[in-house]
Amino acid sequence: MSCMRSSRLAVYFSLGALLSAQSGTSLQVVSELGTLMSTQDVGHALTESRGRIASLDDSGYLWVAKTEDNKEMSTYIGRLIAALDLEVVNRGGFLGMVPFYSGQRSMQSYFALKQELLAIAAMAGGWLKDRKPQTTEFIQNGKEFTGVNAPLDEVGYQIIAKQKNHHSMKRFIRRTVKELGYFIGDEGGLSGFVPFFSGEIGVQNFSQLRLEIVYTVKQPDGWCTSGNAAVLSESGYKMVVHIKNGHEMLLFTKRLGNHLGCQIKDDQTFADGFNKHTSLFESKTFDWLVGAVRKACNISAVSAEYGSMHDVVGKGGVLQLRLKNSTRYKYSEKELNLAGIRPTQFDAVNAKTASAAELKLACPLATDPEANGICKKQQKKLGLPKDQFGATPGCTSKVEQAITDSHRQALLSALHRTESEWTAIIEDDVVPLHPGYFDAAFNKTWEQVPQWAKLVRLSWCTFEKDLGAIRKKTYANTSPFRLIHDMSWFDANANSRRYYTGGCTTGYMVHRSFIPELLGIFPCCCPIDCCMERQLFYAPTKPIRIDGKFRGEQIMINMDAWDSKEDSFNYTKFYQGGVFAQDNRELSSSRPEWNAADTW
Image: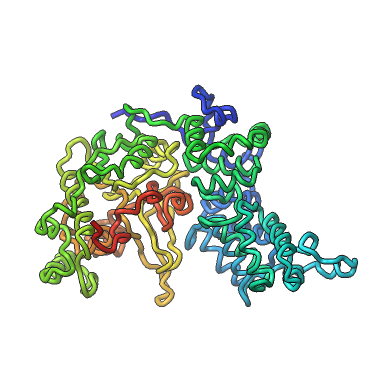
């Protein structure tokens, strides 16, 4: 099959193309390094430390994190610490933090890094503190402290707080917001915030003030923002519009471009244009900006076009689980089309109409008297530990049973397909990350999938609040995507790392030769993603040449976007990895862990 669209990992577009969103824009293919730095910097960047020269923002952090090098990241974090006017008082604490951002133990985001540094500085006995205040100089010069001229440090804050003057503290906070690189997007929100620091309601400290300011940036009801930090949504767009700053709107648009899979050319003419046209954005919406960027970048769905994923699975090989007469999938289908993916509807099992006997084949109800016996047989057949299913095995609702059975039925269909050895199975709320370059990036990454891999996951969710940071060790770097074979968390009690797979079955690709074994996990003794974890991924290895302790290590590899953790937050509020994400901004997820009971 030869159905690939032209290879394009990133594109530039002009200001005129964005503002008018006209067709025929001249597009220029560029390398990933060129999207991060200007042409003059490229040769310089290849020889110098990334930690020393990377920009202090999302793209700079990600560029350094891709090295998965503690030394580079420690240099980068040291620069950010200095920029925040902090100093390290305990070197051991600093070095202990670095691996959680370098990729050695975890990889997060620039915003999370900045927030954590300020949080540590706000802690009593933390390994960071504010630099020594320069207040003495002000006192010696006989200056009277007000919110306008008080130094932005702990002493300056405490003097203004003692005045218990709302307006003076408001000015002090406004200056602090500006120093942190943010702007006031909601004056009412700022006014409501002030009393908690002015002494009207409470007095805290300068470190806590800065932490609270940064924290509010990502909140739905936040009152300050910036183009580099605002959530890519209608509310985030309106906040940036409200600050009436062309440069910040440019930064917001550049982030949106990257999110959609293209790059905005960074030149002065473009920046001047945004300043000149600031008022234009006031009458527009976020959806308009998305459409304008897509059109300027030529990110559009062509009805007859099948992308590189279909080179692997065939034209009918992307099975999307959809309930009959449901419209839930429509947005997902539109976004997938932009990435060259043409899903084929696969009728999902309807919990309202399916028989109890049919659902039981996939997963018995936990209340079923036979559930315990069924799961004991599965435990023995699969060679699982005795406590693998807990005290009450089985699904907790018909909804969980139906979702589990939908995957079982799709696998049965995939087993009998003849168009290709591979089949992709996706759920109805899936969207691709970075659709503009998804097709070329997928093709580049698929070339590195090892022959032993029989299951390629395209999306998963992680629960770091329960286990701590999850390490994703790169198997093959095909930037902007990568392959991950080993994910793990650190068990402090055992002083060792433990294999981890995460939950959710949003999207995966399976080889036909492996489907009989995969079907062998049914009946499941918990919902489908839990079932894959407990009855497949964490099952004992089989005697083949690939080393490992668990079956998942022998047959599965994960395809991931380097920025999946941060970018997926534009769609939902739990951690996701992969090149797909669940989008539940408008509709709650159909995943079983988010549906505790039947609701019809």
